[in-house]
Image 1: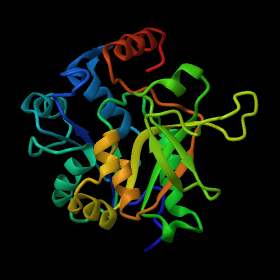
Image 2 (image 1 turned 135 degrees about the horizontal axis):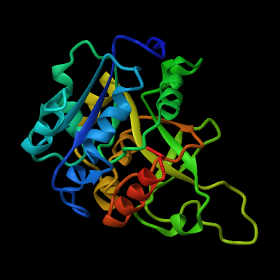
Image 3 (image 1 turned 180 degrees about the vertical axis):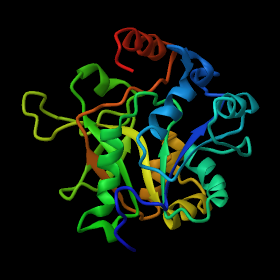
Length: 256
């Protein structure tokens, strides 16, 4: 495995975009400022200039038209995928040159260039050759997020590799007055080596993934590693209608 430069002609970003979200159907086509959520996300990633190609991968003709009508690139995928990484693995065949594939969730319109840069830099580090997948995490500062099952938590080993992801509060502090470990939320942005992504898609979901409905657990269940990169910038995903209202307030305040 080679060390990949930050801006490399073999690095792409794919944005999985499923219309029928269980918690908030059609959320990607909701207006956020003067654009839809999915278009805001696409432009945020494309405008970094880090990628040879940026494309939305979708099962929805409406989302496909939304991106292509604004000059963007979109790829149609099959409707029935368990997760976004399965969806982009299907689309990877459209980009045979891609060695590093970044997965940015379609409901992350506040994705920042600094976070994507930190993620890509993991593949320039001395340990780059041992990394299958890299992803992002940020400290949890709001106690309510720690208890919220929509906020995925992650714990790592001393080298920063993920040990477990869960919707439950982890690590659990048996004595709340003695906190021994920091708590982190997972930010659903990944960078895959091509082989790791295709291997992931070839494997059936395991019991942990099926229980938590978290795709990242499939990597861990089958022995692949995920290097976690800490960032201060905690992206705001849009999971439920309340998240969209908060995002609209941020737009009105000039934060997008």
